[in-house]
Image 1 (tube, helix red, strand yellow):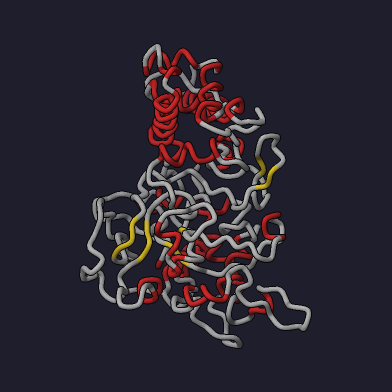
Image 2 (cartoon, rainbow, N blue to C red; image 1 turned 135 degrees about the horizontal axis):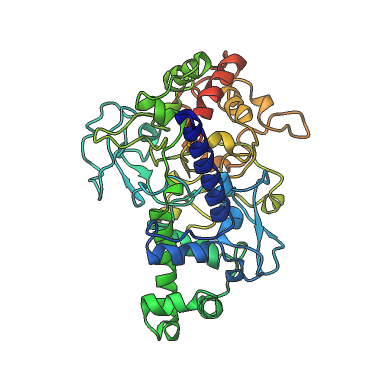
Length: 433
């Protein structure tokens, strides 16, 4: 007689094998059969994994947004390469595409549509002069626009918020000269016309779809957006912390200490921007308030564009954003606060990829102003090149109010090495399983 326990073990082993095989197929770009994804999303998945859609024929969306790395970069390079022949270097670190589905459109309004105490996102716009129902404003809001302290940039996709929808975001890298480098709509649509899935386009959008390049490009962006929305791998909420929030897991002592430091307004104060509580309607936290900060991380010499001393990446103010917001001095040097989900698996941090470990990131926060010589390079005369990746005229935008960035040179840093290790232990609980 076969024991029930043996049967259960065998069944568990079989299910594990199937799950691993499924992950391997998806990582290789093969879309599983069945009702899990709509026909539109399956078309988007085929495009997402297709290197033929790049000018070089070597870069797909998945090349930089690897499913095996939670849709983030697959290696520790500060920026990824692309271009017509794959020879051009990017100018910013590749952000993850995971957990973007609840990102609101870019707007400027009262801080905040999101709150440290888990205020749920409010769709639409808000009056800039409205009274903030959340009480006293935090650092960024207190600094923004003299006479309009409530005005805070928030929402949008990319580091600078220049895209409001997944459709806009998906088409950006396809046309970027240093990414997939299609020179125009016609050249990209010509590739789609020759793709192995061209018949899928005709079936979904009409037999004459490729005779209308602008519409074909719009539909391609829509299919890519449906893939990001429908595929649960982009937002699985399967981490240990999610299990902990549901009462199904227990944090270790180090993880508990790290969580306390993460929330402590005088220590890590991470939760001021990386919200860690469920929303009132029960949605799990995405670990960002979708707002923007000028943190003044040091210049990264590994980015070729930075070899020009007159070049600066100013976030909302460009070089990639060109609307009215890009011409407002108060927005210069501000970059979007990313989600911290799966952050412990990343090897590149901040918009310019200057750091490659969580310990370096936490030391930056603790030492930026207390021990600046540990953060910024020195000039030929031995003086410290403070805030060396932001022109002096924009340095008033830098966050010097919110802990742990509210200290001065010589002050005791907000975090010890041991406390940083505890925060890192907690951050590891945010990794999806």
